[in-house]
Image (tube, rainbow, N blue to C red; front, side):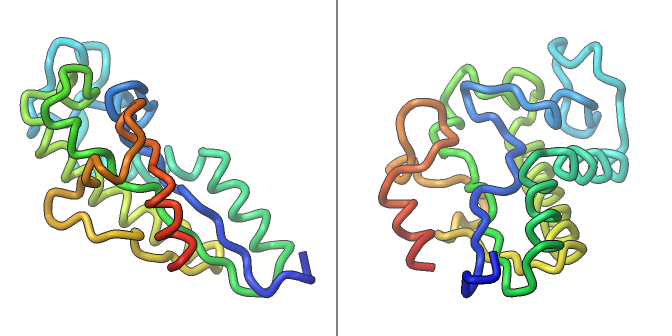
Length: 169
């Protein structure tokens, strides 16, 4: 590792599975404020603060966070982290978007989830001694990536164009 000028870790912070995946983070607890649906009946009701802690713990357990900590321990140069991109704006009209299946207010839950993810990633990267980069594109208040920047398969995987923006960054 010592021969590298810097290390870039991409796509850290996967929290919303778009319309193809269900993530442990989105089904571990139900936040009453966003109207949990019957699909969340088995999940305990949790407070906003508990939800934020759950997101942090969930991200800390992901292989990417463990890899980040190991790299930062072994490598003394700069380590940059590119966050996992926000989901496609196509989820807004897709019936299989997990947050739509789980909440009557999926957009509100999405905003809470991205806010908690941002805070958790900042803490994880700071604790590891890495630098968190901004998203490769500004997704605005909506916090959803324009679908043109995505592959059509699931609402979470980026296009080659987005990948080029990450490398340019």
